[in-house]
Image (cartoon, rainbow, N blue to C red; front, side, top):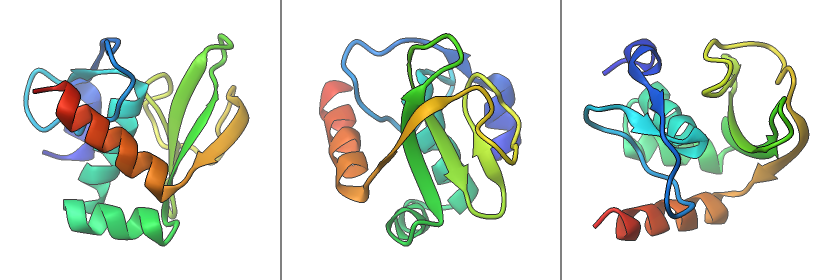
Length: 120
């Protein structure tokens, strides 16, 4: 699946447990963190390459406040820019998002592990 087709088919659906989940089959439903990690995965082309890009800071995930002042997750990819499930096009600036905090590799790994356990 391409990043573009995923973005076009994505539907927001809140999690019961706050976790990250790579959406790898239809229906393409999830929340902002699922959207961000799935786009990171699809952009990288494989799980191994996604982790390499996260570890080497070529791909970064941020917690922030959305334009409506709610907790939100956005993605930045070197050479592409910013994207999230609210503004579904790549852009140069994280327009409308404030109070951004970078989420380091261990935090992302923990959230993905919680997502694996929660989906069983």
